[in-house]
Image 1 (cartoon, rainbow, N blue to C red):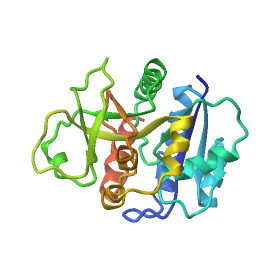
Image 2: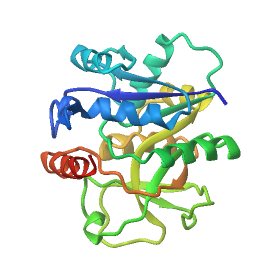
Image 3: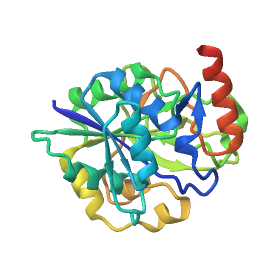
Image 4: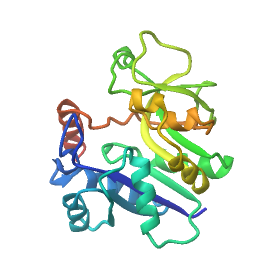
Length: 244
């Protein structure tokens, strides 16, 4: 199936402004993510950004980028605008890879893509096992609760997504910042108004669940840290400096 990966990005993040252009090993976070997406080798890759500085950085590092307007409420709305500007016919799957997860495992990206093709799911995402109990109460770690236990072969439905849990529930995992849409599902999603749950929790995936769009979840081999705070950035920088 013809697939495209679009990475939404913006400089005006509330908790860590300017984070896409923070550098690790001489390369910006957004360009690290772009390189990961290209290495997955499942389709063309673009960054969709509202800031010319991001566009310039991606171009400087050999990537493709599309300038979008600055009125979008979510990353998925942003990637849909970019998709409409990209002259590419026959696309069936659209992957939304978050621009602040430079540690995303390439095999996990490929595995999600493979499961979307095999199962013809409307919308898929990734989650990893929670190894530290502190993550249950950490609002920066989004949790997903699934109908069945996640293992390497299953692709169960998500029941709900939450930011905070007072105690562990069965089948609760750390949600990772990646979505894969059937094209028609993406079109349906962006045509919907934001749901109250989505607004309250600041989680766009709740718009899908609140409108009966099923989300299937694949188990990731590795837990990817998103860059939401200065502490996250320093932790990721330490890991990536070590790996290099």
